[in-house]
Length: 396
Image (cartoon, rainbow, N blue to C red):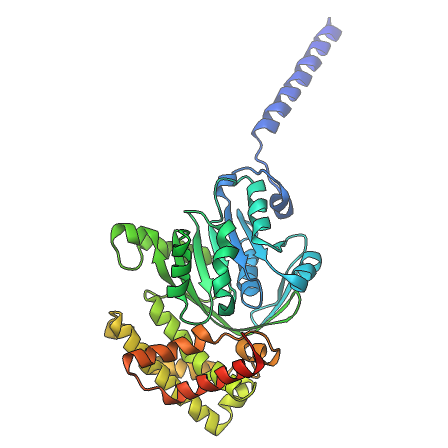
């Protein structure tokens, strides 16, 4: 009798353990590594996964895209990188290495989601269970020499929900809106990004961030603002970009209520320092700030840039509080004093005999000055010298 009872008790215990195991396997949360999460086709809570496409992952795109990856590794965010040529082949095999004065970091080849075409990026997104929609964010960090190619390039990535951040030099917003509107492909919102950063691509897969890093962003176009009759943007537009960069460290981020002001703010550095660097045949920033004559010239071009900037801001309805002044003048020279032997990207392109960013970065500000009757003789001379370099070496 005792033996029978023991057998029954053992059978009940075994059955109970099996039932408990079955219930536990059905109810236990599924925890997966970041590598597994990035390579599964269908994941739990897919709808909560944010998708970001970095188009143009060179010195700027790879840095900010890399900082996003490094900051959101433990949350449901996928960052896709668009690269080309030897840079793509190297990164596909070895990943991206970024040396930074804020601390070096890397994205391994196993972790890096890199693609040679934007069509491949869209296909990869669809395989992850988002076939009915495009990316949540597209960050375009190409040079303005490629502006005309942007609509075709980003077309596979866009949907009505997509927000587009364009980190480029120059007064480019009117043109990018015109190009996308002409294709009836305007996204939910378009942002302009101004990167005050010293970052160069040393070789394929190797980025050197030597100074700065501040990113200022404003809204160029908003579908929601258009529907509501608001001139520029609505609170949700600001909140979306703030939420995107809030967890991204150590990137100093600032939202500018007036994008035009932000563009001219960045021009206060670009026009004198990139301009003099190229006009002088390709010299580094330290040689400008440490030469008495070139430093004086830089201040003069800064003053002319602020003059035309404020005239442009006023004709677009800016208040006196939004105008640029002495603070911006001092900020840009102080920044330059600490850069050391930095090589502006336009100077690098000139020396490498690659297409130079001239039209939107240099020519457009001078044309606006002429339209408004604002004299900028030193800036105009610099731009004419830069255009001469461009013509003589066919750097288009």
